[in-house]
Length: 299
Image 1: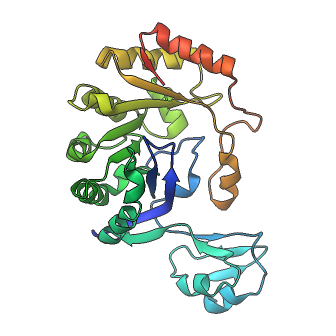
Image 2: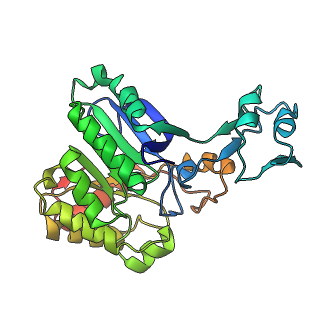
Image 3: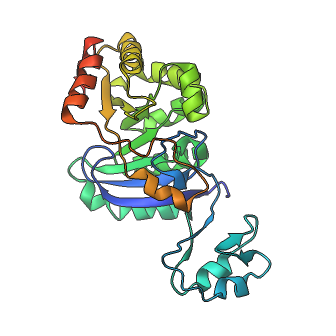
């Protein structure tokens, strides 16, 4: 990628769950975390990859003919990850061979976002998600500045696993911040995500003491066997309240649909196959746990 490019693995229009109003959500590729339950495994690697959809393949062999040194056929195609496979992708008649992401010039992507601006009138806007959008920090900052100049409401969904300087740099151009706090205990966090949560806690502390603390929503995804237990939620809630007593805190019910994405990636889903969404009664229990720790603004 050049400094003027951004790698996007999904551009979701008319989104209603990524901030207020009707939004365009831009999913930036690449993430430094490796959460065992990742909902978007196709967005983890920071480079563009070729994906094979077996159900669409007609076994015509054109991809191998286009790139005989880079694509070998066994029971499925095996790619040379370092090779340019664009000719094979473009020749595939059934679109069984595709890239998992798209390179955009910054200005081109902003124009695509502006195409939806008519739908943002009732409080909508653009949300930058991922992956982890801060992993493409320079592109993210440029996009936020240009959207801000265009009068487009901006939001971000982030793990906050990034430097404090990065957070401070983008804050003037953000209208909403959605950030995760998955696990309070550092050891558990590292085992489940592959990284320490020290920088995440520091960034949350900074945000909840900033002038934009009212625009911050902290989220915990409720993952069976990982995050969804009373001790973890109590510890997170106590920490958040100690930083800002009117903090917005949202508990996200488990989403069992993610495993269907994993066969198209090189990753393995880490949640038990029998895991299910929590019932209304169970969600009420979790909400009571965090309310008992002082959370008043519970979503």
